[in-house]
Length: 204
Image 1 (tube, rainbow, N blue to C red):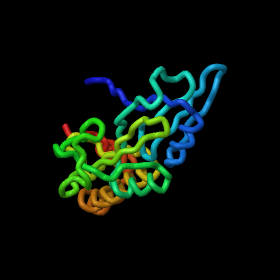
Image 2 (image 1 turned 30 degrees about the horizontal axis):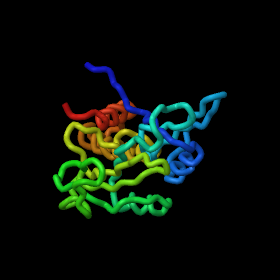
Image 3 (image 1 turned 45 degrees about the vertical axis):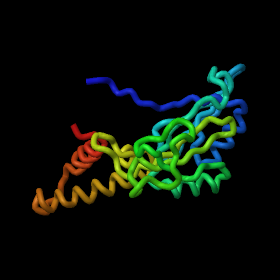
């Protein structure tokens, strides 16, 4: 079995660290770190609910500022996401889908105005840039393809964990009523643990 390799950090090349920090913090991203040494500064922020973060700073990237393109963010409601970005003062594209119906082309080629036909999951996008021109694509996913772990079950926030515990409690109540004949399950912590692990495990 292959060892887990989790993508947790993306390094962004920026020209003005404080400007980039203000921009991403203004999106509601959590500030995880901002530390400096004699010749190094590292700033890390994390989008809400994301297991991956961005890092930028001084002497942390050899890339040309603004050269990173098509980084992907996933949301459950593309129009609500656009409204939030606009409220944060971000210049954001209209919602679009791709003429091929699968994925967006590079740049703005192939963009068709409006959401995907029948609002199909994976098919609706918008785009925006940070002050240096690093480009982001926001994709709407309302239901996941088989074999993909849904972000609702990765427990990346207190709200995610609360939802998971609520689902476990409801399922455990059915288990006690149907499988145990209404008898109190003294081993409920182990049952909860198995339920929550199973939620995060893609089907074989």
